[in-house]
Length: 629
Image 1 (cartoon, rainbow, N blue to C red):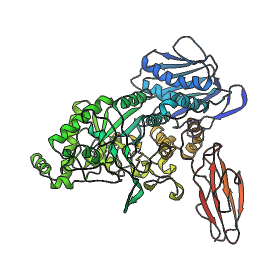
Image 2 (image 1 turned 135 degrees about the vertical axis):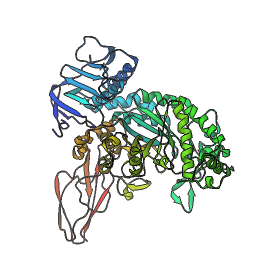
Image 3 (image 1 turned 180 degrees about the vertical axis):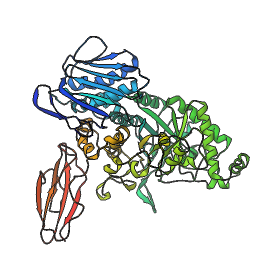
Image 4 (image 1 turned 60 degrees about the vertical axis):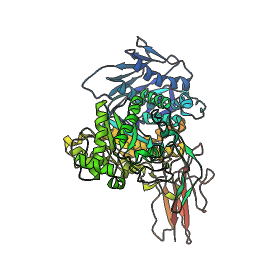
C-alpha cells in the first residue's frame, strides 16, 4: 500500500482462484481502504436509487445500460427497497461536504454509493466503473457506438464479474478539471464530441471547453446571422503540413458547423454525465471567419476570406456600436444553448494596428479616456463582461485579458506560463492554470521523426504529471483563486479523430489525476503502474491513445561499450517488446525482449530498434539506440 491507498492490492475475483485483478483507479482517490473478499455480480443484480429522482435515475441508467450490454443480464434500475446483492445509490444532502464528494462501500453482499449531490454520485459511479473488470468498457462502447459514430465492437466474454471489497472516501482537490478541443481549425462531428466527453467523464474530469470559432472557421449556427456558417463555416482550402513559405494549399474546400439542435443534443449528453460545457466565442481577435461573413464588423471594411493558414491575423472586430450589437446578438443565442456559468470570449492574440489607424477606434479611446490600444481591448472585454453579468453568467478568457486591466468578475486562463495566473490571483480573480509548458497537448510526445506531425514543442507524459497548479508565489488566500487546470488540444495539425485521441490520451489522464488527487498522494511511478489497467479499458472502448515509449532504454551508451545488458518494460501489461539489430523496424515477428537480455556490440557498431506491440497490432513509436562507433 502506497501513500495510504491500496492501489496495487490484489484480490481474488469471486470463487475463481486464478482470477486476480489489481485495484487500479485513475485518478487515485483521496482515501481507499481494502476489505476482505469481493462482491460477485449475478444475473439478479439491480441498481437501487434513494430517493427515486429523475436526475439520479439518469445517472444510474448511464451506469446500468453498459452493464446490461456487457453481461447480457437484465440489470434494472429501481427505487430502493430491501433487496440484497445490489448497488444502492443514496443521495444524502450534507452542506458540510464538497459537492463532488462521495463514499463507496463495496462488501461481499452489497455496494453502497453515497453523496450529497448528483455531481458526487456521477463521480462515484465512474470509480465503481473502474472497479469492475475492463470488459465493462466494451458494454460502454456497444451502448454508445451509435452516438459516437463508430462501429460497434463485439462483446467480450467475462466469466467472473466481481468488485473488490473496498471502502473509498473521496473528493477532488480542485473544482475545475478540464479538457479543451479546438474545432475551428479542424471540425469534428457531433459523434466524436460525444466520445470525447465520455472519456473525459470516465476519468472524473468535469469541464469540456469547446473552442467554436476561429480565423479558419465559424462552427456554431447563429440564426440571426446565417452568413456566419454559410460563409464563415467554410475555407477554400487548407495549408499542406507546414508549407507556409512558399505557401502550398491542398486545393480542397473545407466546411463544417454544428446546428443548434446538434449543440442542444451534445449539451444534454454532457449533462447526463455531469459534465459542464464552456463554449468559446473568440473576440476581438481570431475573428477572420466572422469578418469574412460580415466585413462591416472590421475597422477596414473590404472583402475578406476565411483564413487557410495557421497563425495570428490582423482582422479584428472594430469597437463600434454595430460590433457590440452583433456580438450581443450572437451571445444571446449562445446563452440559450449553454446553461453553464462560464462563457469563454478568447481575448488572446489580438493585433491592434487597425485600431491604431481607425477613426472609430480612436474616437472610442478619446471618449472613454483610454491611454492606449491595450486599454481599448480592456474596454472591449469590459463591455462584454457587463453584458454577460447582467444575464447571470461569468466571463472567462485567456490571460491577454489582463492587459489594460481586468473586468471586475472575469476569470483568467493562464496559458503563457504562470505569470498571468499569478497576477490575476493576486488581484483577487479566479484562475484556471493551462500553461503551454505542461498542458498543450498538441505538442510532440516523442521524437518528431517517429511521431505524427505536431505544432512543435515536447511534452512527455511525465512532464504533464509533474505540474503543480498552485504557484509558490501565492499566499494561502490567493491560492484559493486557483480553480484548477485544463489540457488543451489545438488542432492545426490534428485533422482526424484518431490523431486527436492519440494526442490527448494518456496525457489527459495525468491532468485528471493532478487536479483530482491530493498533492501528497501523487506518485508518478504508481500512476504509470495504474495506467496499465486504464489502457485495457481504453482498448475496450476502441480509443487509439498513444502507447507510451518502452522504458529502460538509456539515452546513450559510452563509446567502446562491447556488451549492453538491458531490461525493458512497457506501461501496458499486455504489450510485447520487440527489437531488431539489423536496421529494420521491429514488427510482431521480431525477437521479443522478455526480462533481462544482453546485446553484444560488434566493433563496427550496431543500431538497436525497439517498440512495444499490443495483441491487436497497435504499436508504440520506434526508439533507436546507436551502439559502438
